[in-house]
Amino acid sequence: MSERNLTLLTDFYELTMMQGYFKKKDANETVIFDAFYRENPHGNGYAICAGLEQVVEYINNLHFDQDDVDYLRTTGLFDEDFLDYLKNFRFSGDIYAIPEGTVVFPREPLVKVIAPIMEAQLIETALLNIINHQSLIATKTARVVYAAKGDGVMEFGLRRAQGPDAGIYGARAAMIAGCIGTSNVLAGQMFDVPIKGTHAHSWIMSFQDELTAFRTYAQLYPSACILLVDTYDTLKSGIPNAIKVFTEMKEAGIPLTFYGIRLDSGDLAYLSKKAKKMLDEAGFTDAVISASNDLDETLINSLKIQGATINSWGVGTNLITSKDCPSFGGVYKLAAVQDKASGKFIPKIKLSENAEKITNPGNKAIKRIYSRETGKIIADLICLEDEKYSESNSLLLFDPMETWKKTHLAPNSYTLRDLLIPVFQKGRCVYHSPKVMDIQKYCKEELNTLWEESLRLVNPHRVHVDLSNELWRMKNQLLDNYNYGR
Image 1 (tube, helix red, strand yellow):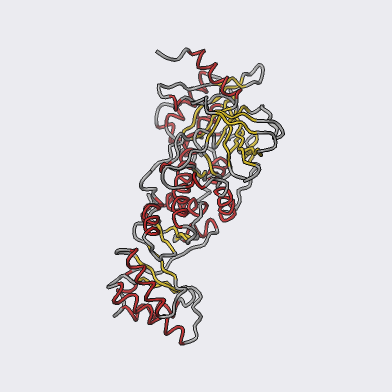
Image 2: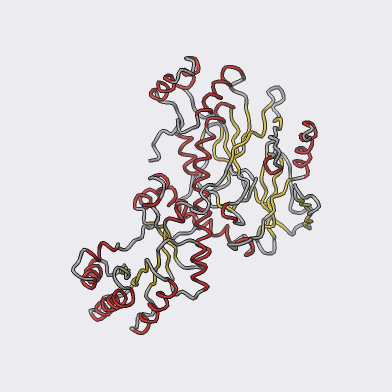
């Protein structure tokens, strides 16, 4: 699927603007665009960025086929000289991005594009489509995994995803954020991640009785024997028959390496506690008790509080669709235009009646600030690209909106990390994407840099994203120049 030409996966106005730049402006004018988001999804304390590998694939394959050019000609809006230009179109700019699996916060650029304006404009839609979707599913998954408190979470959502791509790349994002496996076999093949699954109710119903179905499945898969016990009667039929099969396996000398039951309906707290008691009394104290059935982080957290004995979770619809928050809200805004004479970037700002929609201008970098003592995140600092910082100096942080909120960091009490890394330089990819399971390991380490208060599901602590003094002054000077207000 990575070989597809997605060049026309764009909003039509990107192309009409491109022709406008081509006709009426300097088409090679270099600009900076920032892709960022304004609010954490789900009321969360953070988000997890994902999708960079697919952005790289998209940029690497960005070109207009003859069929694309012929199609655009049929609209009657594009002139032949512009269509001729598209035939040789290639991305020639620079892209910087925050690595996949990194915890991120509102208003900081997840991706920074420095390129000729026509090129930077064209890639807006696809870039947002990819980053928004995978970052949304990764963030949702992190919440589910957090609620599971160390239990394995499996992604089971393919049949409920909004189409094949959402199922495939949603599974990828879910694995990045901590799932132990996915039911999506194609995703397993494409991304080299574990695939998981048991059997459906139809397996049970296709046999003359439940016990025969269980025995047959156990014969086929003795080392992965998770039996679905709620087809007929969970407590009176399903669990007793499962115990009978496990007993037969044990008596036959078959090692019970990975075995247990799955609950897919009913009162999961009550049934799991009953199931645990029955399995323990039969001597199967290490049996897995897995659950599915429209789970999400809220229900899993509630089941934990109720003392449910479930230790494995199959989460489908609510995870793969991010049902309670179906969009990430990432945007792509012009931040600067390069002056040809001096080579310097002239900052640009978008104004709004809503203060939170006023953009941060200029060519920016992001510094993540950690406590040297704990390794936890103190704050993120958005600054201008050419600003220099030293950990041996004191650092004053202040909230860009509520400027009286200030934090003073003593010299050598903190460490700094640049978040944006080069991905493309002069149109050439300089970044190699890690394997998904390596990104998952990195993501787990990233989550460990958050304070527990920022991880909680309800009313999490907000990690501050501050502006440097230089950037704050630049922004306010631009606001004064526009004399914005009534």
